[in-house]
Length: 208
Image (cartoon, rainbow, N blue to C red; front, top):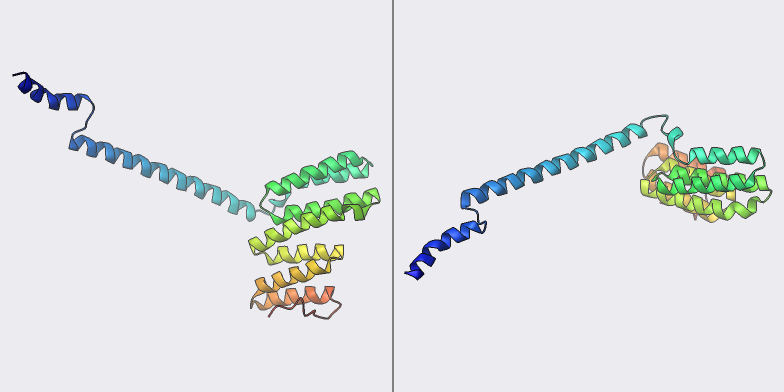
C-alpha cells in the first residue's frame, strides 16, 4: 500500500516542483516572445532616432560651428595673440583629443593647421611640422574611408603646403580613384594636379 501511495503522490510532487503544464508553458513562451519583439522594436527605434539626428546635423550649416575642436583652437589662437604659448599648447592638445574622438576628417585637418600656426608663432614652424603631418595623415585615412573627394583634395592640399610631394601624389591617386568616370570630379582632380605639378601631370600621379 505504501508503494501505491507514493505512486499516486508522484504527479503532485512534480507539479509542486514548478513543472508547467503544456498550456502554461505555451503561455510563458508567448509572453517571452512578445518581450523580445518589444525590445527589438525599441532598439530599432533608438537607432533610427540617432540616425535622424546625425543626418540633421550633416544638413545643418551650423553643424561645423558646433564641432568640438573649434573652441579649443580658438582658445589657442587667443592665447597666441597674447603670447601665452603654454596655454596655446594645452588648447591645441585639447583640440587634438576632440578630433580623435570625432569620426570627422575635418577635425584632424584643422588640428594640423593649428599645429603650424603654433609653430609659426613660436618662430619654429619646422618643429611643429611633424605634428601637422601626423594630423594630416589621420585626416587622409578618414577621408578615404568616407570616400570624400572634397576631403581628399583639401588634405592633399595641406600636404602640398608642407612640401610633401609623396603624399601629394598619393592623395591625387586616391582622388582619381574616387572621381571614377564623373567628368566634373575628374576636372577637379586634373585642376588640382596641374596646379601642384606646374601644369605637367606626373606619371606617378596619373591613375588610369
